[in-house]
Length: 161
Picture 1: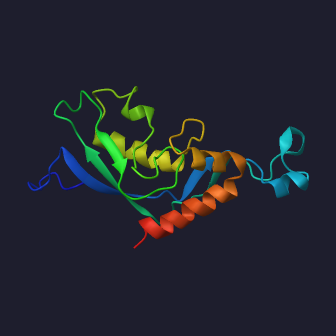
Picture 2 (picture 1 turned 90 degrees about the horizontal axis):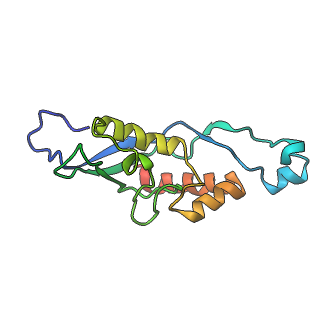
Picture 3 (picture 1 turned 135 degrees about the vertical axis):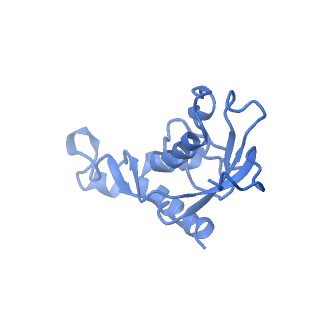
């Protein structure tokens, strides 16, 4: 966050950078090669287990815009990625987020620290079942390797300098 003493900061509208997490939690679907080799399905077991995997967002710095309305904290701030990010819960072109935290579950005792933690958590815990980027969600469900390759390529292209 910007320095609280900085009088030049407009606390109703500012930008922060969030570092991509080193790992993320997914429940990968085995690739077709894994399935044909006997992995996958309830009887064979997936070759990748659910849980932590190296994150395709690792090493990236993602710019996030935060806009607070005059009635903040009674209403949640508007949050969007300014850096392109390939993620099922982020609109690819606009950067808008799909997060209940910023809509239906927001409470007035939450603050900007909670917002930043939630946004970083979103990068670490993508949810393809509640998506705004259906192509990224489909990739996650059909075979995690394709998703990870595109997300890592976009992280390198847009979030590393």
